Image 1 (cartoon, rainbow, N blue to C red):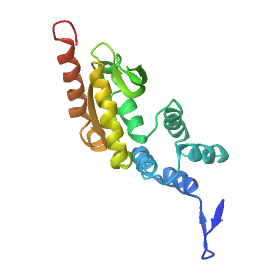
Image 2 (spheres, rainbow, N blue to C red; image 1 turned 120 degrees about the horizontal axis):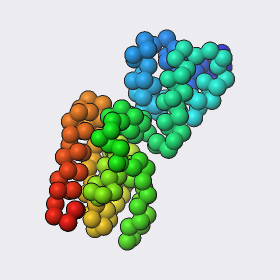
Image 3 (cartoon, rainbow, N blue to C red; image 1 turned 45 degrees about the vertical axis):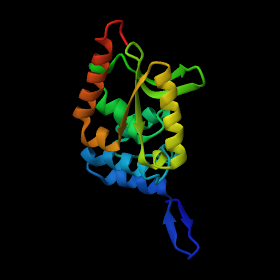
Length: 187
């Protein structure tokens, strides 16, 4: 087992090894939540976990772990985005949405988490860690105003919306899109 020494001389396993062991010993139904929570808490990065998994000859539930790690590799920037894309908004009703979509606005280029281009609806997934700082909130507000100026309506969802109220989140997004598409002239 790889270990690193701490200043007090105590050897500890590296976080990615501990997370991989936690995955291995958790009940299969609990593994994803355990992984998402640990990555959300920044115990380690998904890249470090992927490297540790690749070094391990046997990992219980490897197929599922590799699937989740591939979702991060596809461009998701947080566990919240992975959960939203592959769990909350995974059914056919959301096939017209683009993920990590690039938009050219008058004053900037923006990459949005989720976009329904025809309805001009943007869904942004807000994590508390990044979005709680004043500078981040100011940046988000400026960006949202730029999107509004270009005709886009922004729906903001957080961890509790995606994890604890997924059906409500689905219904809210679909209702906003339907409302925008039912207007005379589209949006």
